[in-house]
Image (cartoon, rainbow, N blue to C red; front, side, top):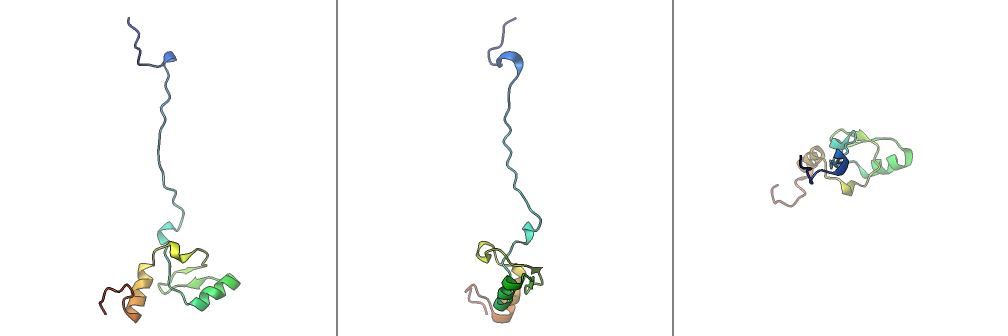
Length: 91
Protein backbone atom coordinates (compact mmCIF):
# COMPACT_ATOMS: atom_id res chain seq x y z
CA UNK A 1 0.00 0.00 0.00
CA UNK A 2 1.15 3.48 -0.82
CA UNK A 3 0.45 6.19 1.80
CA UNK A 4 -1.57 9.16 0.54
CA UNK A 5 0.27 12.44 1.03
CA UNK A 6 -2.74 14.79 0.79
CA UNK A 7 -4.31 13.58 4.08
CA UNK A 8 -3.23 15.07 7.40
CA UNK A 9 -1.20 12.91 9.73
CA UNK A 10 -3.36 11.08 12.24
CA UNK A 11 -6.40 10.92 9.96
CA UNK A 12 -8.21 13.99 11.30
CA UNK A 13 -8.80 17.41 9.83
CA UNK A 14 -10.50 20.58 10.98
CA UNK A 15 -13.01 22.16 8.69
CA UNK A 16 -13.96 25.71 9.57
CA UNK A 17 -17.53 26.64 8.82
CA UNK A 18 -18.16 30.28 7.99
CA UNK A 19 -21.80 31.16 8.45
CA UNK A 20 -23.21 34.65 8.52
CA UNK A 21 -26.48 35.08 10.34
CA UNK A 22 -28.37 38.33 10.61
CA UNK A 23 -29.61 38.90 14.14
CA UNK A 24 -33.28 39.80 14.03
CA UNK A 25 -34.89 41.28 17.10
CA UNK A 26 -38.61 41.46 17.76
CA UNK A 27 -40.07 44.50 16.04
CA UNK A 28 -37.34 44.80 13.40
CA UNK A 29 -40.01 44.82 10.73
CA UNK A 30 -41.55 47.91 12.32
CA UNK A 31 -38.46 50.10 12.44
CA UNK A 32 -39.65 53.22 10.71
CA UNK A 33 -39.70 56.92 11.47
CA UNK A 34 -43.29 57.89 12.20
CA UNK A 35 -45.11 61.20 12.05
CA UNK A 36 -46.14 62.47 15.50
CA UNK A 37 -46.91 66.00 16.67
CA UNK A 38 -43.74 67.66 17.94
CA UNK A 39 -45.28 68.61 21.30
CA UNK A 40 -46.23 64.95 21.87
CA UNK A 41 -42.61 63.88 21.33
CA UNK A 42 -41.46 66.48 23.87
CA UNK A 43 -44.15 65.40 26.33
CA UNK A 44 -43.11 61.77 25.91
CA UNK A 45 -39.48 62.64 26.56
CA UNK A 46 -40.47 64.28 29.86
CA UNK A 47 -43.11 61.83 31.07
CA UNK A 48 -42.02 58.58 29.44
CA UNK A 49 -45.55 58.03 28.15
CA UNK A 50 -46.01 56.44 24.71
CA UNK A 51 -47.14 58.45 21.67
CA UNK A 52 -49.52 57.57 18.83
CA UNK A 53 -48.31 58.06 15.25
CA UNK A 54 -50.57 59.03 12.35
CA UNK A 55 -50.61 55.38 11.25
CA UNK A 56 -51.82 54.29 14.70
CA UNK A 57 -48.56 52.81 15.98
CA UNK A 58 -48.16 53.32 19.72
CA UNK A 59 -44.63 53.42 21.12
CA UNK A 60 -42.25 55.33 23.34
CA UNK A 61 -39.77 57.21 21.13
CA UNK A 62 -36.13 56.67 21.94
CA UNK A 63 -34.18 56.38 18.69
CA UNK A 64 -32.89 58.90 16.18
CA UNK A 65 -35.62 58.99 13.50
CA UNK A 66 -33.08 60.06 10.85
CA UNK A 67 -31.60 56.54 10.96
CA UNK A 68 -34.80 54.88 9.72
CA UNK A 69 -36.99 55.14 6.62
CA UNK A 70 -40.31 56.97 6.89
CA UNK A 71 -43.31 54.77 7.67
CA UNK A 72 -45.20 54.23 4.39
CA UNK A 73 -48.60 54.53 6.09
CA UNK A 74 -47.67 57.80 7.84
CA UNK A 75 -46.27 59.20 4.58
CA UNK A 76 -49.45 58.28 2.71
CA UNK A 77 -51.55 60.11 5.32
CA UNK A 78 -49.33 63.21 5.23
CA UNK A 79 -49.26 63.24 1.42
CA UNK A 80 -53.05 62.90 1.34
CA UNK A 81 -53.50 65.84 3.72
CA UNK A 82 -50.79 68.21 2.49
CA UNK A 83 -49.69 66.89 -0.91
CA UNK A 84 -46.51 65.03 -1.84
CA UNK A 85 -43.37 66.23 -0.08
CA UNK A 86 -40.83 64.50 -2.30
CA UNK A 87 -40.98 67.12 -5.05
CA UNK A 88 -42.26 64.85 -7.81
CA UNK A 89 -44.54 67.59 -9.15
CA UNK A 90 -47.84 65.71 -8.76
CA UNK A 91 -50.42 67.49 -6.70
